[in-house]
Length: 306
Image: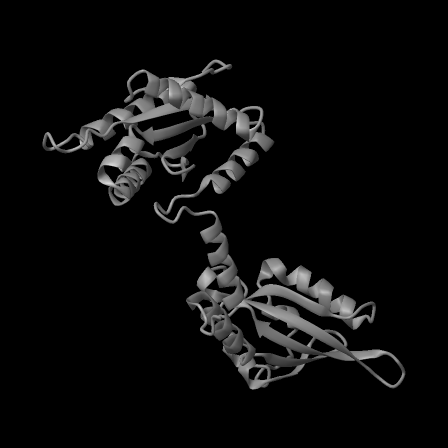
């Protein structure tokens, strides 16, 4: 039985306790203006007591979310339905109207409970404003882990396939390359997993260096890497891939007879039909390149002219 908390579980628990202690209580009139708020509202840069006119609850929201918050509050104050919880970014700096910097924004959740008078009409609402920034950060971290290869730090196959689907949805036609270091299985058997990992990490960083602006680099599996090359013809893609292959072989030239000779190969394809078809064509090109002795670039088929 496990009694201790993992590092991640501890951070989640700490975040929940920390955020819950900073809840802000707000009382609204029937038009959504703030009549009263707990003192910690000042942490968001809003001074209700010192204002000449009471601020509206939507004044807290980042401007792109004002309409969303306004609709939710109006619906709740009209008595059509209970407020429930909504989430929106709050600008915490002094320049509330124009600031759009991420460090000046924190995500909060707002809950409204309408206050009904003796005649049955809604006279205002009691609100709870709770920071959910810690949870947003954790969600972002979890998403990043899900789409990132832990060894190389590149996007993984899942993220790369999602990108291919987006391009297919807009018509496709882009070029894609599948690249790999030749003889990785033999290198693993001779030098071990640690050396193989170091080679893969080094090749990943090399690809990032060789990639042009707009290129997307990802690790597809243990030894194959994918590169999406939008706005490049098949001829330019082949030239780029050939340059990558030749440059890598030059940089990885052995310094002694005992050092392994590292080379790379690439298979090319066009983004067409489906994700699976596109990757199959590119990987078939890689097989053809390796069958020719490695250190080559090949394509199974390129149906359209460059």
